[in-house]
Length: 148
Length: 413
Image 1 (cartoon, chains in turn cyan, blue):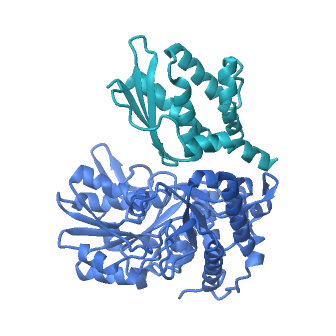
Image 2: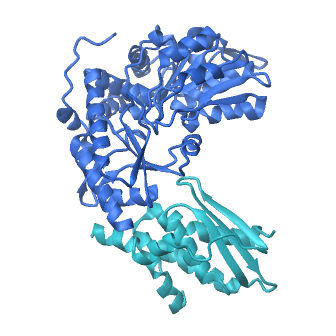
């Protein structure tokens, strides 16, 4: 049981994202940026965004340091947000937050749900939910307050 | 020293049975508690004493003329006596009850040093201080222009006493140093430090939150000016700590909190203050906690302390030896004679992932920066995992830790 929960949390997809984060680095020409920091564990994530005139995520990258969960979550997030409108991104974020807290995430589109499902294991580890949500809150911050 | 006559030999196995929480399980596995450096578990006698006191003799202190108020005041002041003995303070008047070690250090910063500080005056610290012995001095840097002078540690975590000596200049107003690092386990040579600082006329504040747990403290022999202690690491309750200070310093200190109990007389245009230590104990103090702290100190002092330390050192040495098999693990802090704390970093495994996996094995360790970010920077790590040992731990706890580490490796790498 215990082992199952752990293997669920640290499944290969997550470890792979944390070891080989996608879209990692500084985004040249970013027009939005925010830094997220979890003082409890020192996890750090910087999200760089290029929003087009309609607010669509034209491009997105991140940099960060921290635990496997925080970095994998950031990597998956940038992977999924690219090309989304603000309304879509918002919906994705809400669904994700529900998912990691073990709440109903059925309003997520089927595709998104399937991709994010690997993060569902985190709901068994309440102390680690903040690690998973750091990147998403940082993204939101970049959109709302991080205009460069 | 002032050891009670009824001291008993230390039997680690029997002592472990005094801590009921250690017989519980987490996630179906026996609890292996290796986070006593953050907060120690409490023996039955502490919990019973607090409960008994609350059920029989409790009331507010120093106020009422009624029976219970007198009884509670007696217990509160008896607790002060117990603390004075534990630290070998010359008098109960050297002992100020605070809400914890942090408040004790803040009290010195605010009440003693702040009024003395001129821009450019220096405070000497080491890089291994806990934030509670850094931030109160940052306040004086921000607000009064004080300069913080940092003394490095060697790569093994030991203190370079010559570097400390060299950092003390005619501008130095205080040396603020830990007795025992909460990350490295390093024990600092306090007598030597104090002698060198005093030779230059500089007082010394010691953060004893870890040190008082593992070392016998004699504030008079050490000749320290201030010694801060917290109750909950000493097997006592939260919400109570102690500042020991020399009388001359206490007399010079301005009040910190204002309120009841700390005054002599209050009128519309005038206030005079009570003598120390009451001057620094405004408001209703942690009364039940004081009684619990006294019980904890009596409990600890009831053992042959040298045997307790030897037991903890044996666990540390055993753990140190066991983790040598992991070539992917780096121990941070190997100072000679260090106390029973093992901090480490593991290749490719973040401390929080490691701690999560250990947790599921029932093993509680601390992961993070340990409120010592300056030290993390010194060793170029974002965070470490820390196993800290107490009198109730045993070799089976170490074995569980080692097995958990191997398992974490198998899951994460």
